[in-house]
Length: 296
Ligand code: FUB
Image (tube, rainbow, N blue to C red; front, side, top):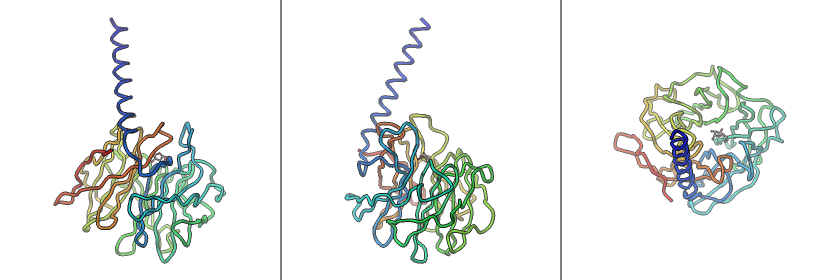
């Protein structure tokens, strides 16, 4: 009897896993290449997507370089190829994860994680090639007890830049105008169930912090968000934006041609071969985000 029950539970679990995987697979990616952790940025009327570069056949998140994709209409995407590689740095040689990019003073700054450290590379163009700006990490391994991955660069309207990052704890540090020098200490921000993958955007004077929370499980990772009146908080937790039914989730929210969009990934054939998807975002009158479903 006990064996039968165990076997039934196992079958049910297998069915649920299959369904979850089928839902993720049914989701239409915006381009066919494996990619994840997409940071969407608009430079001079074009949208650029800076993702992690998942490799076919990967059995883990073993990534070594970064590509950028661009679009003018959210339909046709151009892959500009490798814009920066771990071969271009001396201080790490694995785990090239979750980049972000910003333009300032006519230069483009690419923030990226490598072996639990965060670096910054610079270029004259959004499509690179980028060069390591410092020859060493901008944020070192385990600073303030944080697993230093998943950088998000936010440039406020007053010209102050903030670099958010971290798995386990959410850290933020101000940057000087050169975008490669820290300005003050790392601060820890409190965010309910914060896991990783921070993204900060501003709309109508409100600061939004969206992030994968620790609330999901291996088949359901939740993207949640908080709102604040200042880039350093305090942040007020608002709830779930999306359940991507995949091993993990990580995304960005960006305005393009007057509309707001969420870019995120789902598991493809495996959690290490992920696919990038996109959904339009709707806001309520009070600025809160309407929870969304993945469309096919
Ligand atoms: O892509 C590698 C890691 O997986 C990222 O740093 C995390 O956010 C998760 O998506």
